[in-house]
Amino acid sequence: MTIPTDTLSQLSGLLPIAPAVGPFPLLSFVDAVTRFRSEEVEVVGDENGALPLTISGQTVRVAGHPDLTDYHSPLGEDVSAIADDLTQLVTRGFRLDLDSLPQEACGPLAAALVEREVAIEIDEHTVSAVVELPGSFDDYLGMLSKKQRHEVRRKHRRYEDLLGEVIHEVHNEPGWAFDEFIRLHRLSDGEKGGFMTPERQNFFETLVELDGWRVDLLRIPDSDRAAATLFSYSDDSGIYLYNSAYDPELSHASPGIAIVGTLIEQAISEGLPRFDFLKGDETYKFRLGAEARPLYRITGAGA
Image (cartoon, rainbow, N blue to C red; front, side, top):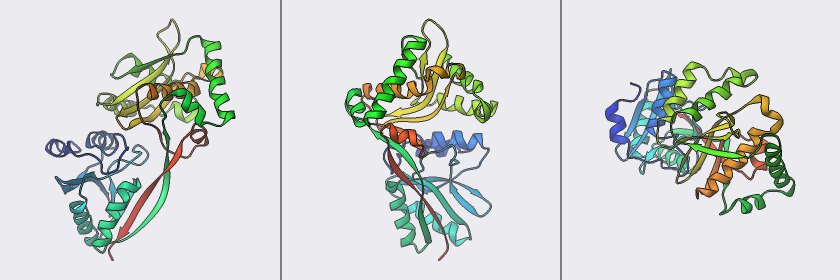
């Protein structure tokens, strides 16, 4: 057991101090990631504020490898006990490397460490890409440049002309849709085709069993096959696009691009306030209306 059952139970009611960070700081997600990576977790803090950590050699990191975890944040409303425990670790010779922190998480934690005379540095090391969604899909299209608006509509029409009706489905449980997500991943060319190992499949199977995770897909008309799938998480704060796959044999119909548009439309229809492409500054995200959300790293050692 990576995180003891009693710890999960005691802290399960704590919410991230940073808003709009999806499932990533929650102990249920951290437990899934650290199980997948066979990492041990130490939770510091108390019932008012907690932070799960992993310790490798003399380096302390927030639990949840940054390649798999898009946001880190302390849980709860008070970082005092977290900062006390981190200060003790620094005093014992450990180095802090706390990544993927939105400003709302980085600010309070950094201030508490400085107050305890821990010498830290803060740098912006990456961004996430977030679209603030309007009330209708037409209004969303109006947010885009004329060229990009035309491109979204053109790719939608191309899909419709080549494959038939655009059928967007939402599946919130394991089953056929999840199986299609795995199948399409393994059809991919190159490195992506080898991504979905049995171990990674087990990881995604763990996630899809948790509340909030979903598979959205474009079903090929009159078939039991998907042209494209998106593996995401949604809650009241928005939808978080975690992974994707499409049928490479259908690339001429642009299903991978078409489904992003239909998922944004679906999110608006569900009344969600934002669409989060998560980490990465790929150009296509910003062409589709995203704004950069800076993520910070705190590093430090003893004064």
